[in-house]
Amino acid sequence: MSFRGLSRPNATSGMGVADHSKNTFMELKQKKVHRYVIFKVDEKKREVVVEKTGGPAESYDDFAASLPENDCRYAVFDYDFVTSENCQKSKIFFIAWLVSFSLFYM
Image (cartoon, rainbow, N blue to C red; front, side, top):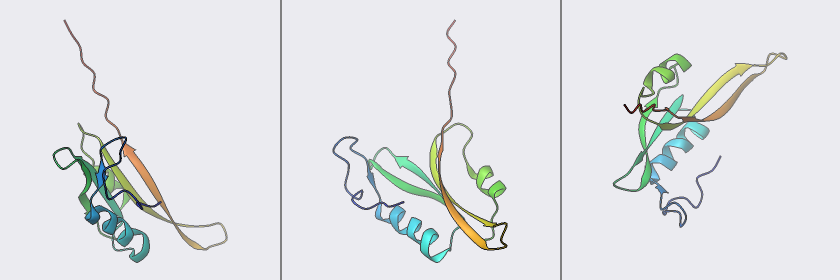
């Protein structure tokens, strides 16, 4: 996963990625200082910004509780696990949190 080339708004979408967002992701990936990072789209700035980070001791349940009920977000979660060969491993998952809205007209 890489944010290379995304600091400026994309010609197609007009959306960019804030430098702080890229740096925070790299902290999660390389330094393991975050368990998860939740990103949101800042419509005024037209860029993806960090909304919240979770410390290394936080769980998936902590992460899930941090997601909004009525709004969409993007996130990365660093999942630690042990293989059947007893090796400690880690995988980073990209998550698109999408909330469907139902509108009823009478």
